[in-house]
Length: 204
Ligand code: URA
Picture 1 (cartoon, rainbow, N blue to C red):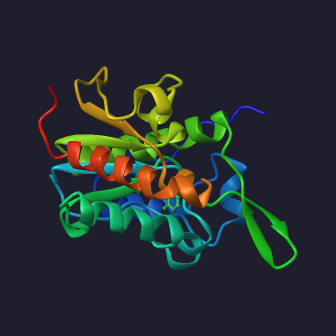
Picture 2: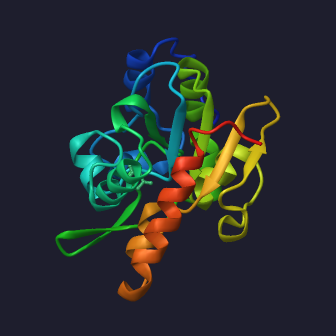
């Protein structure tokens, strides 16, 4: 079914946005999640990194990228010479979508409708945070930010311009690296960190 029309008014500040997200029922995911997770970081940063959705740890702790994918992301940021405290980190989707399996909660990719239902939160966050540039971590974020499907393996490391003139750099999602065969991970990590380093250079 199509998502219900979002009736919540624009939040106006990041804390108000975070509050409003907790009351969002525009798609079914929120009902199963512990809480809505918004982005964190300074206003007017050089870069805003956008992931897919909170994972298990993020859902429990209420913060983006604090689980295994977040730890890999932090390591890659350090290698790229970027301090996490200086950038804004958020997600395309505000709630953790999962399938219960015994005691575990297995990540499920959000549907296109769910991403679309959540897009206004991301857009409002971008408008409030005013980053100099955006980085899409993976295909869900790329599609949410660019409004079109992206082939991240082909388009990674490249800048694209949105309709609102904001620049978006595409790269892989850190979870994609975690799923690679161990023998491929070191090189994939180097390439990922190189992409992240591009995010603090002016687009050419
Ligand atoms: N994966 C994401 O896309 N975002 C998070 O916050 C954590 C894992």
